[in-house]
Length: 468
Ligand SMILES: NC(=O)c1ccc[n+]([C@@H]2O[C@H](COP(=O)([O-])OP(=O)(O)OC[C@H]3O[C@@H](n4cnc5c(N)ncnc54)[C@H](O)[C@@H]3O)[C@@H](O)[C@H]2O)c1
Image 1 (cartoon, rainbow, N blue to C red):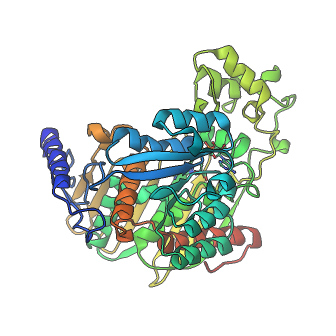
Image 2 (tube, protein in one colour):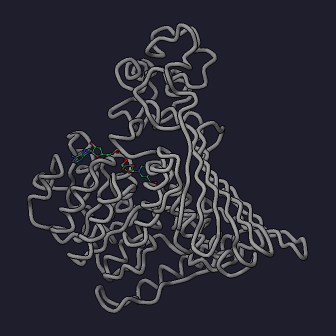
């Protein structure tokens, strides 16, 4: 199918929305348009369709946590204003709350600070997004469910297995939809990968090798200097970074994990590895700055990476960036930080029925993304989150899936291979029709991979095989 034919299909999907049943009526069948852009396998029907939710009235949504992720989801309302309106915001950072309010025309009396403030007023929207830091998920989510909100909760859901179980129980008690942001499940790449596993193309699934390459600078930014550097304050990296991956593995295998054994540690980012004379900050005249791949000056000033973490910054003003590096955690030498997250992590899993999987999370790579090999009795699939190749053992034929969502204007730039906005579209529809089946990452499903993560961390520390 040519690109113009695909766009025609998207148009047809939008036209289909006009005849959809009324809100709260019986959930209509999911539209399922197949898409071929290039690659002989691209015509597989994975339900790829417009990002515009198929609903008959505008839904109202409030946002708790107006930071990076909160902005990703709420920007959907700017893209499709007739589908979603953001009607309230809570953030302890007044600049961010005000910025969000201005963007969405939120009235002053619906701008809140700490989440306790917004939870102290009766429910005033159809749904709530909770996109606060990891340690601010459990409490607001318990409150939001009790208030009657359907909730989209950022991952990881909570900081302990017990809290995850309590969130599940709370969503059942109040009969609310609770969805987690396991966005990769909604990305066309993973939908297609799963399709070719479950339809028997490679025979019986036997094992999966899955690698999460964090990328060296991203590791230093998020897990050494930045927001997720402390596993006690946030969550262990196997959840903070890799709960997506455990979840994808569990989803591809499609049976419960029976045991997990893990290992990993900090190889590089610690005091004992500091080169001689490295000062506390890269801005303190470090003698190694010109050669260090982790130099904050190189990452933030020269390469202009990750600047979205700094509020009210002129990204073209190098002096202003340098000043942030002198005064915030992001200017610190990677060998002199208060980090405890491993920079390499391995986990082996056994699933009911005998399927095995081995997972590695690696800081020391030039690229991010994911790399996956799926071994079946009749063939193998090998992919890199952009394309995958299936090899048939008997014929030796190889076939390629390589649809690029960026070729579709509506999807261009959507994070996680299109998964971010596709998840939000499905959440909106799930709320509109009160139909959690429109989501593949409701709490009752997502809890499993969270429990796998907590078991992995227990195993890493105990040295024993653990049961999730
Ligand atoms: N789904 C994904 O792929 C994905 C990717 C990155 C991050 N995340 C998760 O999303 C969450 C948010 O991450 P982020 O990068 O957007 O962080 P962020 O720091 O950019 O945003 C969090 C916001 O929450 C606000 N906040 C903190 N405490 C609050 C409180 N008590 N009440 C109200 N607001 C409060 C902060 O001021 C901040 O603006 C984290 O849990 C993170 O692990 C998920």
